[in-house]
Image 1: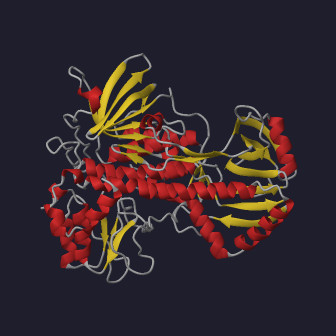
Image 2 (image 1 turned 60 degrees about the vertical axis):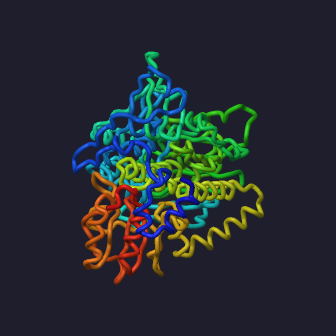
Image 3 (image 1 turned 90 degrees about the horizontal axis):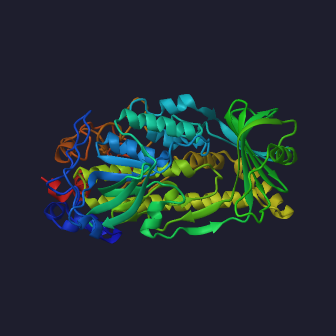
Length: 559
């Protein structure tokens, strides 16, 4: 369904929404007779008996297909997050990756506050295993020469996780894969997805295994989480528009002594030649990133340890000693993004949909939050609880976030790499002013922590009230309460004062709304919070909430 049709659906009255039986407004697969059973607490979802034929390849007589509800291609942090969320919701899935094993490199290094909050909703233990394995970073200092221009601290971020968590991607993937294994799902490695066909009723693909065996599969939905060189994106023919920035960059993970800043603090060093970033991984171990002049080589060359030493001596703090590198790499920065994250029954998430400068460290977190956003919507549709139009909200919501991240990362990169002395002086003066104002500095920290993400223009937004209760806003987790979205089913949660009209809502929409009504967020207001913790609507009128839910529900679920 198009956003225009979704807007039309939103305008239907509850009664007309109940009467609507337009086939374009409901999920075709699993079919009405084969729809996945909604799991009871602690039970896995049942696999559908069959999926409809898909395309010419799937329709050929004599073909045997293995079916699942969702086929996920790519088992990095994004694919693992999506698989874990869907498994928790009882949605049958397969997760394949052409690599023989998960990465053993540190790669993406930070989990931000919002991502940790969303992990708290997941399987047993929440974010605790990640926090235990990581190292908390309290803030970042910006320096020009030896002068501190300003600091951004994380302690005022409105979250139980008011810090940046340094955790190598290899560890993030290990913990996610262990969580997934505990949910009974294994990653199928050395398995490539080829010959992808997307039809109106499902998707088909050929899985090529390491032993040369070909397996024909079909699924109701396909999600490409397979990185910047996504085979799914190429199969869909989606342009990856953007540019490559004209410079080379080096990255080094190594041991360093003599770092003059606290070991819980990152530092950005602005120099007339470029920028140097020092980020703690754990005490004594650091990541260093710096720009260098672009070479004519096809790819940015990896530095030697001596190259890194020279850069740190010239741009960074005096008196440091570098040794024991575990990763030395060169790279170039690309800023690219697809225009839409969905094409029919296929979706893109993470680097398959957007790549950008590492400035701000937002890439992996943005991708993991793509996965969380998509998972609860897929689950509600797959289980027949919500109209298939719900899935139309994924692309506009996450694409706008991707645009914001892309622009911010490019802006930070260009500001940090200024070479004109006059422009550098202006930059330093402006940064000193901005970072010296607590309100602005806290706003920067909230943006870095990703707690400032707001789906203000989402087609899912219902009625709102004045003040902070604006639909699309993050609703901070309430200490002592079970996180919204936790448990084996993705349910909306009501925050309201007790009344007969409010009490009737969970009964009328049992598959969509959690039976527990929580204390009101604001006097006289009925607030409905989505399974991912964002506000769906807020109104004094319970009937308006009922109308919102009626428009969201699958037509055949309206009783």
